[in-house]
Length: 150
Image 1 (cartoon, rainbow, N blue to C red):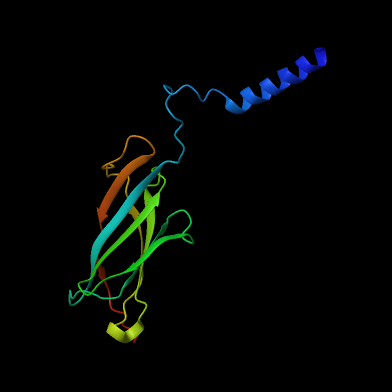
Image 2 (tube, rainbow, N blue to C red):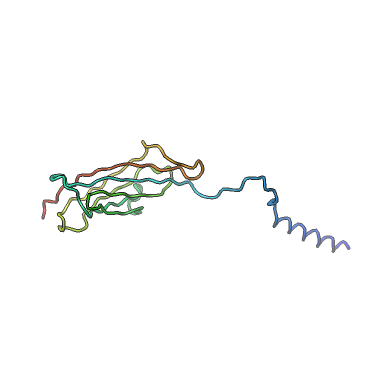
């Protein structure tokens, strides 16, 4: 009899351990996730001499601490406009932006630019008050110098 009670007690203990306290529906659910924010960079790229809009200029948005990790890459349109977006840690404030002319002399050759864009002076917009901090938007207009070595 003692052995049967011991086995019954162990089974009840295991059953309660699997069930836990999940029967209480008034407790808030556990929120899983990680903090994130959106960083958006927009702008226009023009020729420094003629001030003409530049098409097909590559814009690489990467981590400033490790420029080997690229977040997003885009190309300027026929009006010279571009937009890059990244979802990163909200504590990130500085990003590396690399501007390249990948098509060579097809529409004129331009010198590359590498610059750091700092988002620390901009407030987050439209955060949810939980894991998503919101969006920071910055505009960066660029003037590229023609490559005179051609």
